[in-house]
Amino acid sequence: MQSHPSYPILSSHLKKYPASAASLFQTYNDITYAQEWKEISVVDLGEEYRRAAIRGRRKIGLEDGGGFAEEFSYVFPCSLSEKFTFEQLRNAFSHLETGQIFLAITSEDASIVYYKLSTGIVKPPV
Image (cartoon, rainbow, N blue to C red; front, side):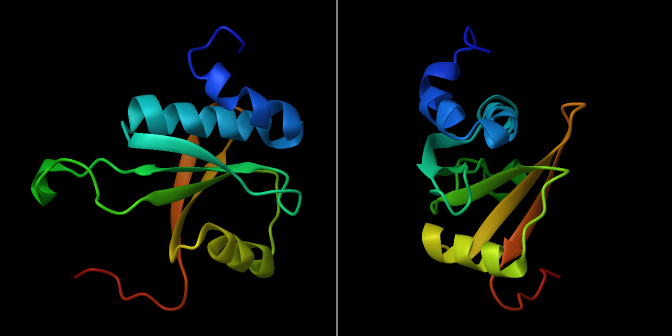
């Protein structure tokens, strides 16, 4: 892990929150290299969550004009075995000052499932 190009960016958070280090490392690399987000940074969520989140601009598909989203998006990485209450997730929205979070659920086989969470009731696109 230490020889990977993303390690210097993540090392302080990986050492500070070892229980969530694998999820952060896996999600950060997926967002950076597979999803190709830009202006990516790591946001420390503090002792309440004992983890860091990821902030960046999502790549927009060609059907939507291409390029990158104007607004920053936030990713909350966690493992499949972790549990969070609605209260904890609601507080994450407040902490990150956003109305939308991508919950990145990682597993030991290196797969990631992303769930888009929003505050309140959001009508899906038709």
